[in-house]
Length: 466
Image (cartoon, rainbow, N blue to C red; front, side):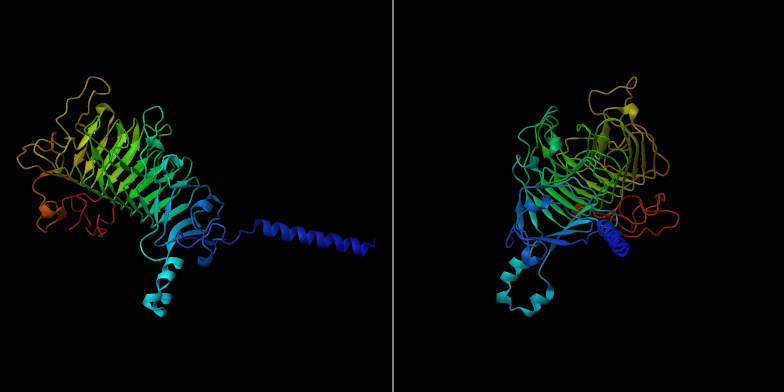
């Protein structure tokens, strides 16, 4: 072999190796994948609306950062799937929906539109149900990856467990959307959950649950478990701007159980510190927040409306709980739990309660009456939390001379808050409300209505700024 030929061969080999390494490290392009239960076929490629998949079968495949998995509007799905792919901060993987384009509708005679809606999507949000406990314990989207966004989907009618106790812990396996242990930076937004015993279960960290509507789950999950909209196991999670209605039920060993948010200390992996719960609307639920665990720390509860039947906040040992600018209404009956705050460990709690409105029955007090037990012990039954730093709150309880239950704090007010329309549950403030400009600025920029907080030196008390 000549020197020229061997040198040329080596040079071609080096060029090929360079190109191989380049393409090996060059990221593949993200793609859209389409799913349509009315039109698709699971043997299709899924990469166009004309070649959509039909069911959830292919969603356990591997996907790339930046991929979009789109369900046809008007389609419906039964069962569940395990999703193991991850996106990145810059390129999350997104689950959302698609529909026929406006230009197709405009140029197609109305009588000929039906096949277009079936083929390209049209109508309500894609719907998902899993009524079979034997399929993924009732999970629908079991997310085992990170940087995944679930946007604008409808979940309904999930199963209850066949039984649940402290040994099998079947309640802890539930969740229409289940964010698995070790996952992080997932987002669930703009979704609706109807009759889902556990709407969202979060075992991962740094997740955002925002602008969802969860409603109407009123059947016991197990003997001592009512339905719960959002269950949290791990820390650094945010729950914001959601609306939750009619979660929980009467009955069971506590007379009433379930509610909006539970920090699930029964789960073996529980470590749910640093939780931010803000700007949520809670109506007719059996409790707003329960921290069913020991040694929970750094919980912020701010700018929420709780117009519920049972406790606003209750739990075991709860440290550094910051309760700011909430409107708490406890006048719905029957009201089984006659507490605003309760605990099993009075000596292990620390709260800061500031800028809140409390409207309560005349047999209830916000912080008391309180009898401190001897030593650092668990009390046998639920107890009020007693005297914690509290200031600039407004309390109203007609016929109740002491709605606070401890000495009033700085700036505390006992007065009718003068809501816009109390009878019709409009708890915004009238112009002459005593809550106007009586709160302390805390760094928030918007109220529960997303209305800007413009005051330089003060703010209104409660969740709504006038």
